[in-house]
Image (tube, rainbow, N blue to C red; front, top):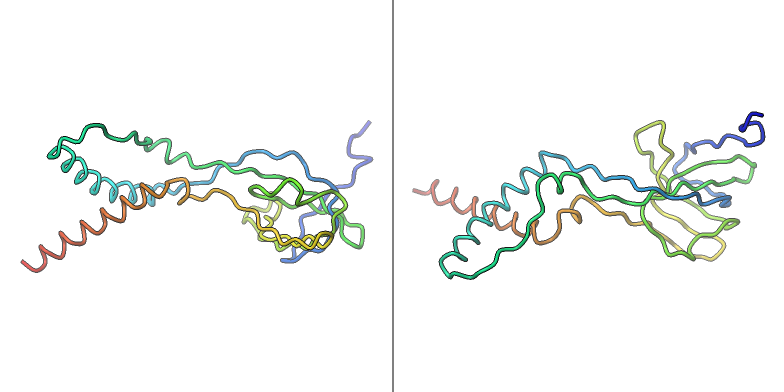
Length: 179
């Protein structure tokens, strides 16, 4: 027996806005955010300059322990976020599939809820469009799924250290240009 004979194939919506009814929230799976190696190298190099200055100050003041730092390989791997495929049916009975990236409150969406979705193409024709914004017309809620980003993965301490490193390098460059 052919398994597809009783189930209709879902479409990927082509428009930016889709108003439909939720049929099913499928099981989610993790997907990794890509971290561009050039950006990572620049951030780590700038942070390294500030790190060298901090080690020098610690050595002079003999302030003990250093902090544990994540390796280049760990930083390059990138954060993972949850991808939940969502099946929808529009007013004409067509079945669509879109992707919800990140997390929402558990009670935010239920099958049979009427929703208006703002979608964005992911650039790959095999991937369903990504949900940017959800207006749950049944409950009146406005929802925005949030995912981890490259910048949240690197973390505020490393980014602040990189900014300090850039300032140190700019100061050194300005001092040598004046001389």
